[in-house]
Length: 121
Image 1 (tube, rainbow, N blue to C red):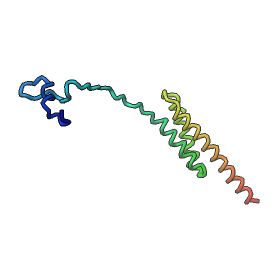
Image 2 (image 1 turned 180 degrees about the vertical axis):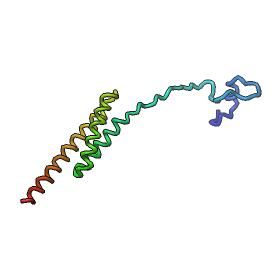
Image 3 (image 1 turned 45 degrees about the horizontal axis):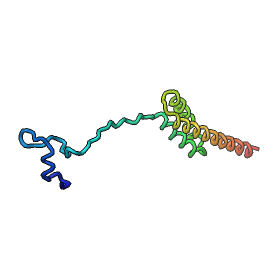
Image 4 (image 1 turned 45 degrees about the vertical axis):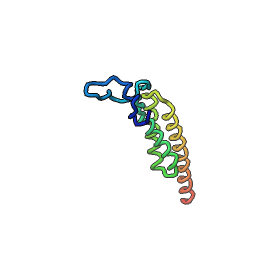
């Protein structure tokens, strides 16, 4: 049997339909075709967003305006995602990264305040 399904044994495996055409989809009769459903992966957009915002908070902790905003929004989205969704890993990681970023950002703000107070006197 050749791979283009042109061999005589391929044509003999099928019952011919009227008009001489084999039935669609043309596999040999002795082969097994396994059909399975492909389940859609549940989208967890809030968890992904909180994880991304946690990473952004951790990267930009030295810019207080960006890190405070992204850290707070990331924590809120992580809490909402923990309540709504069944998957808990990504929101927890996003919350931990947001907390670490906010802590580093608060240390940077404290450093700016101490430095400013040092120059005032």
